[in-house]
Structures are given as C-alpha cells and as structure tokens.
Length: 259
Image (cartoon, rainbow, N blue to C red):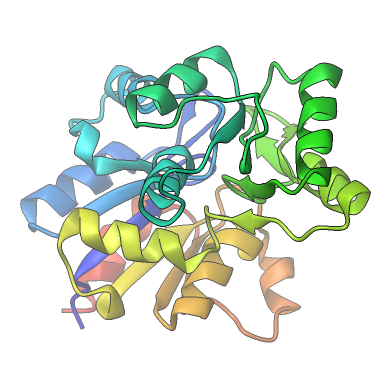
C-alpha cells in the first residue's frame, strides 16, 4: 500500500557527517515527482533548523525548511503546549539557545520548573552542576533525544545519552524524552505533513531510535544499512524492521513495489 507519508532520518540515512549518501538526492526528487509527502527527522539538537536547511541545500537537496523537523523544535512545541507557563533552564549551545528563544522558550536560571537538556557541544561543569541542583530542587528533566552516540564522517562522537543517564542517576529521577523513539515525534511529523499517521513509514539507520519508534507506533519501517545498524544486528532482533535495504538509493524501487 502506498504510504501516506515518509519520516526520513538524516545522519546515517541521507548523509553521514559531511558526506552525502549516494542516491539520496535522486530519492528526494522521486518523492517530489510522485507527490509522496516526506519530512526529515533529526534527533541531533546540537544545531538549528537553519543549519540543517543550509547543509542540505549545499549538498544539492531542493527542499523547504518545512521538510525538516528536529528534536529541538518538537521539544519546544511540547513545552509550550504541555508545560505552558513553566520556567525553563536550558542546557544548549548559543545558537540553539537563540533558536529556542524564537520558539518561545527562554532560559531561566532562577528556580526553574524544567531543566531542558539538548545535545550541547559547549557543555561545561557549571551547566551540569546547575542542572543537577535545579532537578534536586524539584525541576523536571526533559531531554530532546536519547542518543548515546552521534555519527561523524568516519567515527562516532559522544552524544546526549550519557548526560541524561548521569543526571537521572544522580537525582533519582526519570527523564521525559521527546525525540525518537518517542511517539510525540510521530504525531508531530504527521501534523507537519497533514497525513494519516497510521500509514506513514519510518526510514532510518538506527535500531533503538528509528526502528523502535516505528515498532512502538505500529507502523512500517525501512532500515538502511548505510549508517549504524548492520545486517548482523538485524538477525539478532526479535521484532525486525518491515524492510531492509542497503541505502536510500534503493527506496524508489521499493516504493514502486508498494503501489
């Protein structure tokens, strides 16, 4: 059955670090030609939407900003809608902090109700310590995503996950995580595209975020082997992805078969 829309991971799926995955641009042009709605999802909250939009444009993708949904944007919307009026202490880089301010989330270090943890590449002991004390004083810990590692061109960097584990362990609290695999991302992606979420398909390279989210949502999934997951990982899984392909270059042929 033709999908109502596609949620497409970015790093490891259409590019890896600064390297374009071969066939990714052609895949996007195919989706546009066939009028299949799509949105790029990224858990990486270390950069702004403008950063990702300009990066994709420089790589040759012909898309709009509306084609990108980051965990930062999703988290800001969640806080505005479901934590309205709450004071928020933001742990983020300068650019992301500014983006959050434009989205209505200003950092407040005076007895905040929420500690918002992003993938902050400028994180310091002072930021961690302030977050710790605020949580111990009753603030809720909200994190943009749970990833332990962030892919680069030829390796992986430490991501937000270990800081979530540390603050959760030290404070004895359970964090609220907004990004993949949270079903909040599915709801927001469906809203962005204006489609039936039950017939969407998730495409990505990670088992514990991309594929897990699809499984939790009860929707089909397409695992690409161009990023983190390997076929040997899939063979060990109890609940496997709906489809497995080498890269998004094979996606048009797969979608033609679903007509």
